[in-house]
Amino acid sequence: MNDGSDVRRRQLIAAALGLPLAARAGGAFAQQPGWPNRPVKVVLGYPPGGAADGTARPIEPKLQEALGQPVLFDYRPGAGATIAADFTAKAAADGYTLHFVDSGPMTILPNGKKLGYDPFDSFTPIGMVCTGGTLLVAHPSIEANTVQELIAMAKAKPGALSYGTSGIGGAGHLAAELLQEMAGIRMEHVPYKGGSQAAADLIGGQVPLLFSSMATAIPHVQTGKMKAIAVTSLTRASALPEVRTVAEQGLPGFEASVWFAMVGPAKLPEEVVGRVNGAINAALADPKVQDAIRRQGYEPVSGPPGGLAAQIRADHEKWGKVIRDAKIVFA
Image (cartoon, rainbow, N blue to C red):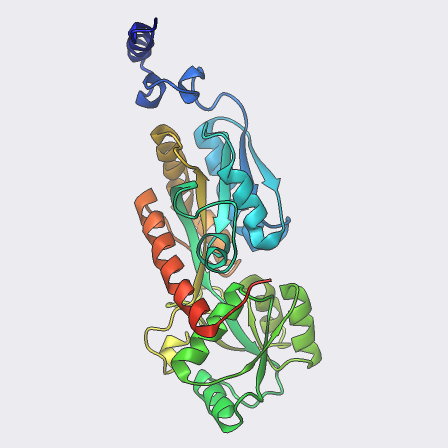
């Protein structure tokens, strides 16, 4: 019969050796001789080369340095990044599987699809990394140069003005729906199967407007193939400081931001959360890391795990209302 003496003996040994509190509590994490003692995997829900990869890479060296182990990226794209989120939710909470996630699979898709995970109960928030907006761009031939001019065009011919996005229920689509709701207009949505095709059609003149990711649109704005109208975040983007926000152009309080953050499976040990959060915040304090993230069109945002948890809940509620009001049906 186990009267708890074995557990108590392990706790006393752990305390004598100076092991962290999590290691004294028993369980799978406690059986390991010190975390981490092998490579740590970071799961991404998108393929290499995209915004997720571009904002995760700058913090990788600092994370690896802080943990003293290789940090390996595991790309599991598909289904709006919910495949990667589901994989993480079902992984062991031993600190060896983390997830670099964006706001879509955490705050948008759970409002419109039945998923194999819960955005609140299936994960442990670790820390925010960066945030940014969608870029509203137009074909150069479009006469409108401001949000107010676009609103006037849309009101003059209801439903005649169309806009493209990377897909139904994506960040661009919801930014457009929020703008239409606040401005009292209606435009026709042209969803694509990705941002690249949407951008190509805008440049080719097949669609006049596009709500695009910053990373996709910035190069085309810089070459004059696209005209930047506004950024949907609450503050301007460092990569395009001359482009005003939607809020600055007559819709006060408008914000449609996306973010990237680090989470882990539910019940991740406090030691893991603390060390990874500290490593992320240290990385974000490095000017070189900040510059690398800003070149992607995002702004570095450090903070405690609790701040990320609050952001997930707030955005889940906000986008849930937009989805219901717009009657968006996910595929």
